[in-house]
Length: 505
Image (cartoon, rainbow, N blue to C red; front, side, top):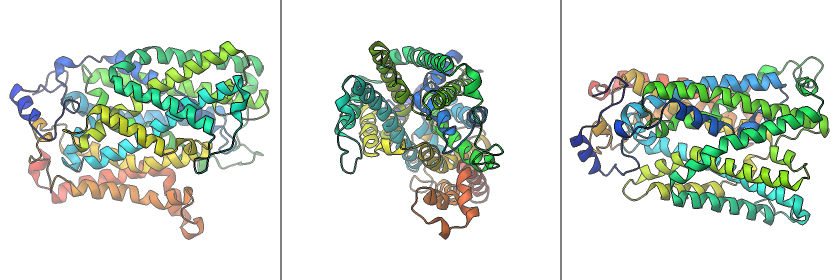
């Protein structure tokens, strides 16, 4: 039964049955309508808070780096378009979370099976672990670089074998990692205070950098007149589209993670309108604004210093005023910590808990996220803009696109937005499929990701480009789109042809 707001009511007997299931724990339980507190402004604030972060700044500044070569308008246009595109699956996948109060792993049970849901959940969790590591490295790197201004001897030192970073860098990284682990230990409520002050802090810092860039570079004229490398007479003349599509795929990939696990947040929405309008207001515009700050400041560095500096922490270390440096370090650390917990712990903690609901708690899932994030050596993912945008963001887009296609095909086309809530928590119910796994969903996922695999292997230098057809390599540039479309079609066709009608109610 649903209300006019589109929320499903949980009958008391259903809640009692669910609570006895081996697929249940308090963190995975459906949120009842009476406990939904998030309005439109809550969702807008969530996206403003999560979008105003250093990786957003680095996205845009990475696009105008000479290795890619866009001008400011091309970079901002690419980012804005990508976020309008990713907003569509974001809102669609959020619907089930709002209607039924269920988190992402439980939502996956309808299409992948009660056991098979672990596949998309763990794939999503591993990507979150990578992002957790990246954000933790950024926070630790800010501490290291700003401390190095006060203690110049820290800037030296030999690189540690295998890790390729210095002992001082490692210690600052682990220190910031420890702060993240402490917040997880205290519980997710601890982050509310940080989220409330985080967005204003980073926006003020960003606008301050923008003012500095404007004043030092002689206004926005010189900054925004930096030519595109694709203009006539420039090094990459006529090659814009060659770089645009893989860049667009990478930008879509930036929030393709949250477009899957958005039910983890939308389950707290008061109405569908709140999550739809709130997300539409909060995501694309904030991304474009903060990306513009990144573009303008990075362009200014090429005028002021004669070199392009795409990392805002490196820009800040050029300042010598100790007050500015300390305030900047504290602001960056608080902002990065808040984004990290909200964007990169909530989902994987639920995903890991889904592996063994009765044994793994949200807190334990958070600890697993932290450990895996360290082992992934995130500093290597940020080695240069090209590897960050094309290899990392583009690489996992090939996996997340097919998952989005399957979820949306199943929920909106096959089931027409109707789920059996008790069966989602029943290991022997209608979502059991064969041994708890929907082989159709697994096949659709693999077929959706397969076309992008050769191109990915070429990009990460595990396959010689001369051994693969150029047309096959180019498919990687469209990995999210190809994966989404192919998995969507394969899943729909399979459901219509092979699965009984009773599983499509």
